[in-house]
Image (cartoon, rainbow, N blue to C red; front, side, top):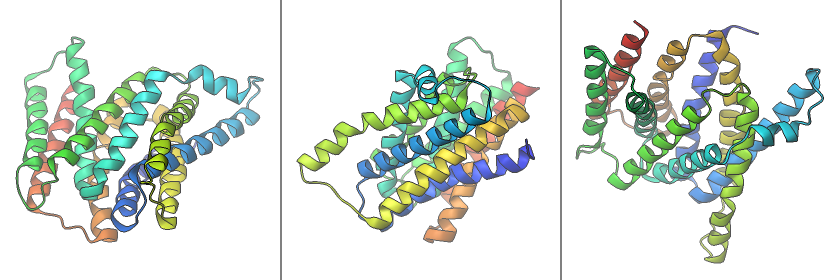
Length: 289
């Protein structure tokens, strides 16, 4: 099965690379965010479908891969994935790599924690402290300043995080996550078609060869292969470890943005990151205890 923590490290790099590739495409090329999203989802769906077919050939099951994918996919999951992907892309038009990743993963974790509270889960005192600390960190990130993202872009990225949080909750109990993800990517790709038609009809279609390559890398490598590696690692590690290790993604994305796009790392971003990630870690740690 391989070293689980090695697989986890690769998966976290892939998740951070999604933020970097999207930001590189939208900051440095002329590709439209809607087209980027469509290519990302479609190439991810193709990659995952090929992985499903390869897995099916190695197993003794006679079920058709297409039938298995259709059986596992859900409209709710596909809609959540579509909202995440489209909001993610449009938000990154005017937002640094690390800031976007922090807002995204902060919103994901806070959404999942909040749903748990609404379902009756109880927090210890330190968990409440962590929850409030994480929320305050996101507020600090949005305060006016040189490194604060535009409010509309920030709201889009938070919406993407909320959608991804619900997507994660919908797939939490799946016994076939690879099939589920492949089907949801396929259905989410279909949801982008009206947007592509609208871009073509209104003649706002923006194409860029480099942007397409970034989108393909995001879909095939960072999304398709990244999710497949993550789902292979998940059964080998504790759920609390899985939740905690994802907090590394905004840090990795920030360093990638600094290294590849020369994005500044301000005091405001550092303080907000420490508060948000530290608060979420505290909630998860106390839940484990």
